[in-house]
Picture 1 (tube, rainbow, N blue to C red):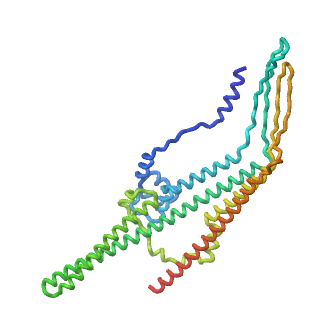
Picture 2 (picture 1 turned 90 degrees about the vertical axis):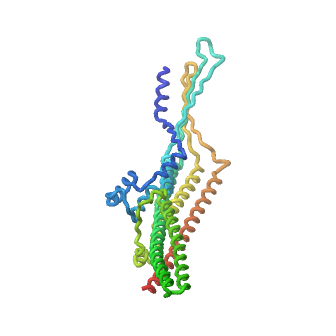
Picture 3 (picture 1 turned 45 degrees about the horizontal axis):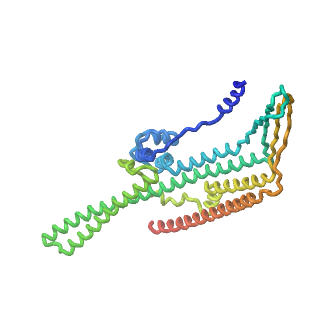
Length: 386
């Protein structure tokens, strides 16, 4: 008999998940961050999957924006956070789809006045099966699906932000390096000019004022070169941050960005088209819409909770030789509370989600207007230079 009772317990425990500890050591994670490089085998596999032509030469000695974008997508910590949040939201769908487990109660009794020869014990069992009403489970699933969609769109938003920051950092580095190279060329010319004027002064063909002016100009260029070197170093730090790499990983690597492509304004859409595309396709807009839909389903869930769930019960009792069986139907009576508070909160959250969407749309429109104005101004400046 004990083996028969043990069997269902073993079956139930076999379906339970176990806990697997994953401790984090800050010193180890910091060491892993510092050990990241552009020659990593995992990075090469990621690049080969998404752009096979970029992985043919490895490790690469020169990187452009397309290749560095893949590097940032592989390494940048903000994307790891966004992906983890998406994983949490996706797991929430499984949680929402869960059903309530039935319960069993063991209610043994003892009769102190039992007749002689009859066992005073009368064991009993009661089963309770919960039944959700008003489609609550389906509504929970739909809400969780919209939250997962919002988290997925947030991954796209973060990826776009990472690429934008990377592009800006690469432009800054390219500009700083070109400025430094020009200053070095000017410095060489000014150095030769100062030497020529000094020789002419010694020969009596140039005045001390001319030599002094040349040396002052040389000193300014030397200071400018030192400042340019500092700006290049700072730009390299920003590029490393945009990639999710330590700055030492950039040593010995060249970075290419054609600044001439920035002036290709004809390829940009006009303001009306840009607005339409942004308000319909931007991932942050889609995420806000998904959040609003999730708030709609959250409200429906609270409304459905006005209708109580049912509990179907069944019991058995062996009462001193008599077999007794009973049925029970249990439900909560919605007399004192009709779930008004949670419904009001859900309605307020829906209004909040709508306001957030409206604010985001206004922000997007303002960004496009600023970009369109900058495009127009830049086009006029380029026309004057030509």
